[in-house]
Image (cartoon, rainbow, N blue to C red; front, side, top):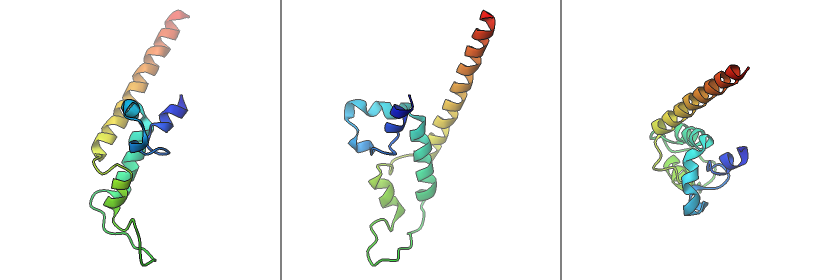
Amino acid sequence: TTIPVVLFSGFFVNFNAIPSYLQWLTYLSYVRYGFEGAMLSVYGFGREKLHCSEAYCHFRTPSLFLKEMTMDQANFWVDVGALSAFFVFIRVISYLVLRFKLKMM
């Protein structure tokens, strides 16, 4: 179950490269929200231009990098909320499964 979660996270395959009939699966990947949140926290929030040692630097502006990764429309707080919801959901499911297992004993 880990491979689909990572494949649809946008880490290895860009969101634009995923076929349109499978793009809804990206919303079920908790790795997507973690990766997207990390990218936004590093390159988002109006970050100043990056320093480059070469004359030409394609990713001098962080917003261009986010656009290249198709994360320019992403929202950091949506990612935080989704990760929190995953956390609560997994805790509740774990509690219910353990409670059910104890009842069966």
